[in-house]
Image (cartoon, rainbow, N blue to C red):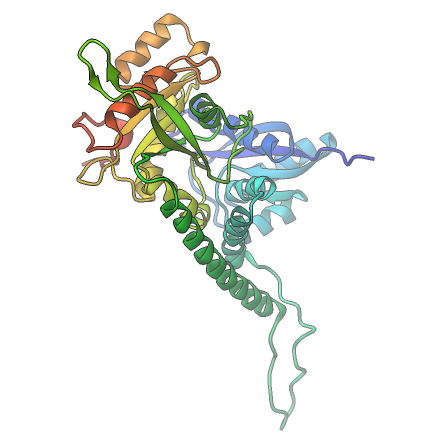
Length: 395
């Protein structure tokens, strides 16, 4: 008999200056994450609070009222859109009687379900260990040496929490050594690839259609309508056509090719533990000759998604300008879901982007032409868009 799907309540803190629609969009994204992890979303709530409560983050009054509201609905989990301290998670669980997950813990759970290869499993386990280490709770006393009284030597022995911390630190060291070895193997594989073939990395917000574009360019890939469906980097050879002009006779008849790598998707508040753990995987992005930045053109938060992608690329070492800046092409995918006025507005906001639909092959020829012209070779001067630049602090 199959176990029933666990039901969850989603909450997010809304500060006085936060827009209602933006908070609701964040809750919708959290709902997609929860469904991807196997939860049934029972309700979503935005908790308006001017200041963060040190003990429970959201305040005991609102949490108690919510717990009473969902008590009869079979809700077992409370999922928060913020990153909480271990003490805050414990306090919320005691107050509500629900199992509490913060955003980082939820994303880690999804990665644990999706990891298939040895490298991906080790990367996710490392991220989990580094996440859990400062959140260990409780201290068992059965390992303490009994002491006390005049003339008796010795005090409390090693508590269980100290043993757990030591075991996790040991495991972290083992995983880092293993990942260092796997990174060397990956580098050897890079060096063993055919010389002269340019390498292109597909990057973008999760579930924007990167794998669909990989399939359109190379004929291989298994697209899935899931968040973080791709954790293991997949590299395939793509045919780019001939760079030959029959009128002038210039160019070569030999068809051109490149290597296209599908990489893990980015997301708002991507846990720093995962960014650090997936260092070798994201190395495919840093060392690529060019980047295809894929975005869901029909998503209402398109501009915010692009800013997240730009910030994450800078975090992993891909600067938008400078001597070593990689050529970038913005691919606005899924334009088949837009009307003509919306497409014209996109063209005005992102004039250098390719409007595409990977599943129908729309825009793929334009992408191939860009790759033939730009890769390999130095990037052409271009005007950077707002999403690529770091945000400037208000004066």
